[in-house]
Image (cartoon, rainbow, N blue to C red; front, side, top):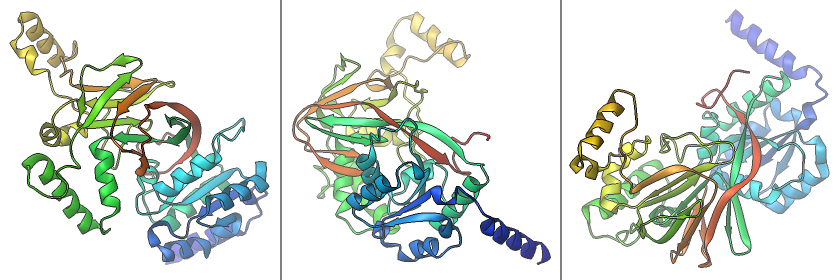
Length: 364
């Protein structure tokens, strides 16, 4: 008990210690995020919140106006809310015209927290916030610069980390209108899988059909017209435990994935695809001895396997999609298509605070 009391006293002393940078911290709160009022109250009532300026509103215009008034004083912005709140924030403040990227900490608090978990902030929002503030005041923050995607269609553009088209966007759209909750979500996605793979007749059977259209990657037209999965991404992770990109992207590229297989095959292969495992080209097994030699060398670590060409998965600088699909998704948010080509390139860069549970964490 003595050591615990000393630790608490030391924490109180650290919080009470003067810090000329303490008002550089801004916490942006969306009180509607996930409906977790108690979690938000825990943050705002905490000692650490006294060291931060607060912007509590669900109106993005209010947030932008407040940040403009703060100007260069806002050094660290902590965002309480899910992926939807983060997406709205980013698309309201970028591009900023600042020489340095905004320093952002995603502390969670929404229904979907893919971005926060990827950054390594997987605890309760109040605990994440405490850790961020403490490390900032001790000059111990670990950060990483991550580019955003720019998804452009006609005159419109959206910045985000992940683009999804075809059945993924349609399924997300249906899920948004379904009852929320862990068990409801599991049952709902099981129903979607049954509609896809087993052909069980239900109201999701039509939703899980492939994206039909043309996809160009770096101006190369793919020789396919139907795609079960279509993603672009800058972080390497789609959702928790799903890291489907086997290659490393370069500074000026992003991950691009377009799988021209049937929905039945895609569902069957999903456990492997989610870990970046791409199947071997089955036709190579019927070809001359040279291909068998290549396979043998690959297993010996002296070459690469001949992969199935229908599974296109590589870094890209530009992706263009022409389709009649009416929906697409950016970071889990649904957008209505205008019918014009969708062009995906790299956008501005954000500087993210990396937490202890992130695979991206580097030593300070």
